[in-house]
Structure formats: structure tokens, C-alpha cells
Length: 208
Image 1 (tube, rainbow, N blue to C red):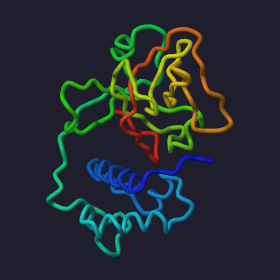
Image 2 (tube, rainbow, N blue to C red; image 1 turned 30 degrees about the vertical axis):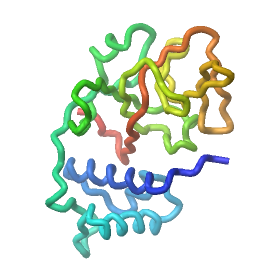
Image 3 (cartoon, one colour; image 1 turned 60 degrees about the horizontal axis):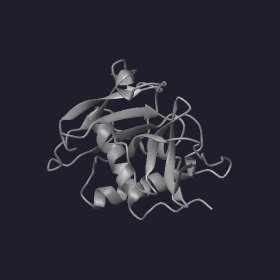
Image 4 (tube, one colour; image 1 turned 90 degrees about the horizontal axis):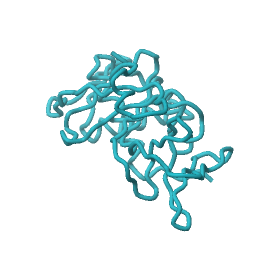
């Protein structure tokens, strides 16, 4: 059985999605929100948006499909460019960052000492954690993780997104999809970072 999404997490993700798209000048429609989060019905997306309006986090102008905006008191933080790595080849991560596929804007409210990078997700191994093919994961670079963290790790020269677990004291990488098997490294496990944000776009123009 897929783990339940913690209470309020989906709405926070919807708000971040709306905030980022509004900041780009592309406020989504209700149906686009439904498609972005794979909700079964448009009504589910509409309820999340209506609740955000009631909470004062969004403003809705009636009669306009793209009529959502942010209240004046919610200030958009300046954004910093984070390198988007289409894939990470064998070798040092810094070498991959020197030649990124593009950049993703991330709000500068993050601690300035954090080093971030982004990866485009391929495959369905993390679908039960709400991470789907084509999603962009924002990753904080770090070499350690706590059990239960979703991490990006280097395995056989490729970067993979999995949940980090300790089984009898041994590190393992677990998918969030019963059709996939856990990855049990034979040697040292190289952690590249911890996933701190997931983004979903309705088109392919996500880099600058």
C-alpha cells in the first residue's frame, strides 16, 4: 500500500506550484493544476485552490480561467539560478555542474551556504512518493542522509532518486513503487544530496 501524503503537504505543494507559475507570469488554470498533480478530478484541484483563497494565500478574480494571483502581502523572494543536470555521468559532480543543461529559479530564502542542483526525473520508481517522470527535483548537495530521506545517489555511474534506508545497519536505496526492487550497493554508496523540493511542469520549457 502506498504511504499516505502527510496532512497539508499536498496543499503546500499546490501553493508552491501556483506561486512559482504566477511569478513566471503564467498563472495556471484549475485543469492545469489537476494535470500537474495527477488528481483524479478537476474538483479536487478546485478544492485545494478554494482553500488557499480562504487561507489568504491566493486571490481569485471571478470569470477568468487564469484569474489567480498572489496577495500583495506575499512578497516574491528574488530567485537564484540552480544548475539543471539532465543526467550525472561517472566522475565528480562539480564537473557535471560546469556544463549544465540549463537553470531552474529557486527562491533565495534558502540558506546562502547551501549548494543546490536540480535533476530531471526519469522512470516511475518513486511514483508513490509523488515523484513522476519529467518532474524536476531540487537537491541540496550533501554526502550524508538520515534514514527515510529521499536522496540522489550515484550507482554504477548514474544518478538515481530513491529513499535512503538502513537495514541491519547497512545502507539501501528503496523505490516507492512495488514493481521495483531495492538497490543494495555492493560497495561504498555515494550520496550526492537530499531532495528538498519537487517541481512539475505542464510543458517542456523549464530551463533558461
